[in-house]
Structure formats: structure tokens, C-alpha cells
Image (cartoon, rainbow, N blue to C red; front, side, top):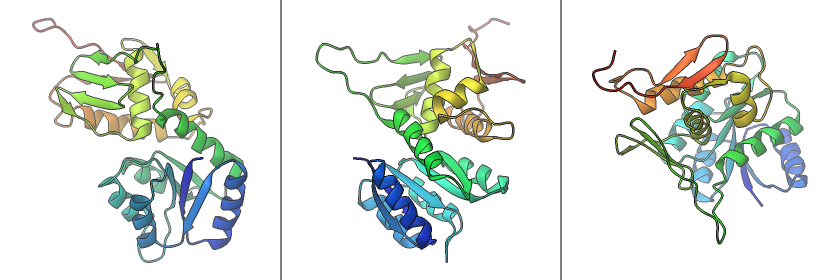
Length: 237
């Protein structure tokens, strides 16, 4: 049973979600302020956190920043409907996804399960080989250990960033459409005004080459998607 933490000062909403998620097989804990949310996030081994942006005393963004200093636990932010700025800020700070309020609890469950599929490292059973390392240029991704290294230095990614990178590396040299990324990683169809993929890719670019020392490895193919490029050989033009 997966343990979910809900951090929201709307007690009625927390009670509704606790009942609904419980029926879906989740064990739910809810708290109603920022400080308790941060303390609980580090203390009880939650599989995922649902975090509201608007909290009394301290914003959900501040809580997310504190969590990311200590943990890579997946986080879904709850934002005001129509407030795209909040959604982009949350993703840039390390949230894995967002839900605009009000929302259908069924949609939240779908988002949680999509993240779970990408964060559960499948251990090989007896007789099975471990997934091979993915190496493209200076990037090395280990699907089993769920680690990424750039020139031998570990790169810390969120669960969703890791999933995006894994798909791009597996199709290195090919264009991966935004629709494919939305379906395979976010677990939902691509909507016309959803910028979450672009924000995650932008974050990936900064993390895998923070000093922009080389050519852009993740190229935008305008109107289509993204491509992880093979590095040019030295001396080639």
C-alpha cells in the first residue's frame, strides 16, 4: 500500500481525498499547515506528496523548496485554476506535476498512478538481467539504480525528469513527440496550453549541462517534440 501525504488547509477537501484515495488502496495522512507538512514529508517515508500552493503562514513553494533540499519524493502541487504562473513556478522548483483546483479526485488518482509507474524501480527477478546502462556522450543513466551521471558526476533529477531523460536517451538521435512524452511520462493526453513538458525539459537542460559548456544536447524540434543528439566527434564540423 502506497502512503500519500496531503498538505492542504482545506480540511473538508482533505477528508474527501482521504476517503477516496483510501478506496483506491492508498494510505493517506493529511496535515493543514506548512510546518507540519515539511516535518511529515521527511519523517514517515511517503511515496508521494500532494501539496497546496496556498497555505497559512508559509506558501507551498517554500515547503517544496525545503523538501527538495532533503528529498526527491514526488510532489504534485495543487494550484488555483487559471493561474499558470503558479504551475510553472512549482515545476521549475522541482514539482513533478500539478493539479488546478477544483479537480476530480479520479484525475488525481490517475496522476498519482502515472508518477508511480515511473518511480517504481523494477528489480530483476531470478534469471533476469538488469537493465543495461544508457550512455550517450557524457550522460550515463542507470535504469535499475535510477541514477544519472554527467562526466562522472551525479545529477539529481526528480522522478519525472528522470523519466523524460530515459525516454530521450532510449531514442537518442530520433525525435520524440510531445504527445508521446505526455502519454508515457505524465500519463495523460497532451492539452493545448499545458507547458509542463517544456518546463521539465528546460530544467533537464540546466541540470545535465549547468555551465552550458557544450552543444545543446536536448534539441527542440519546433511544433513536434524533442531530440537527444549524439555529440559531434572532435574536429568535425
